[in-house]
Image (tube, rainbow, N blue to C red; front, side):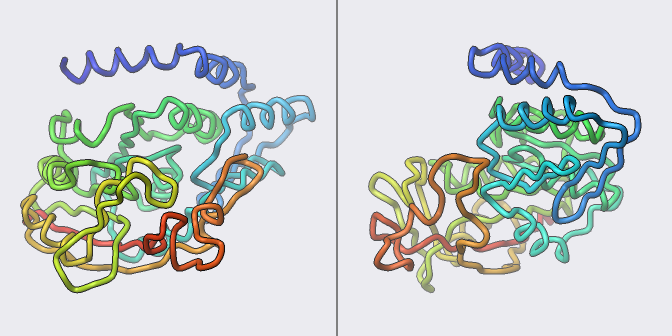
Length: 300
């Protein structure tokens, strides 16, 4: 199946019985002429001339689209307080990238929060990859008001190597530990980059100088699809095995309850429920609590 056939196949996901109501609600949203957009820590939309009925419709649609993992977003006085305060990660990474006139991809882009913010760096093109129909619907909802040029593909990291064009910069944030073959994933990202291209990646890590990784037996931090959590040196080895010439560690940061927490916009558990209540340095399974390493890898 080629990419176009795959796109057509995945469009059908938008007709699933749990997704169709979301699509119908988004399609019924009113269109406004007087809209201003702010792409700061909160991706915010200000609409002039909106009435209470329209605002209520917008809020009902936003709540239908829960859970909101990434954000925050605001539409007039409606504040979508996402589980992750994604501005923390974005602001950490922003000093380390240059996107001007570059072709940029975000792998596992969720609802597009980072992509919306990247517009301020005047890239040549922005492409998001995420196979989730719910996250795509959230992106559609926000972009209904913003009207960006972002291309959102309901594709995964495995499709990047075969995409119609290559990228100057690829972001891959919080995806690697979900893959059972991390080196194969890194190779796909490597193939998707132009020469001289950069990969900006973050992943869970464990402390230590040895070139080893933790392999959770069943779950890590209550998450079932976590396969390998490397030391920094093991991660560097994976990157070199994939072909990257240089790997720079940008930051190491423990995830805290300010960055990831339960809000009314997720209605599910969050970090506080994933940690040992008697020892926040451990997960409920007894593993080291989540810590992330942020790297930049170069394709020479």
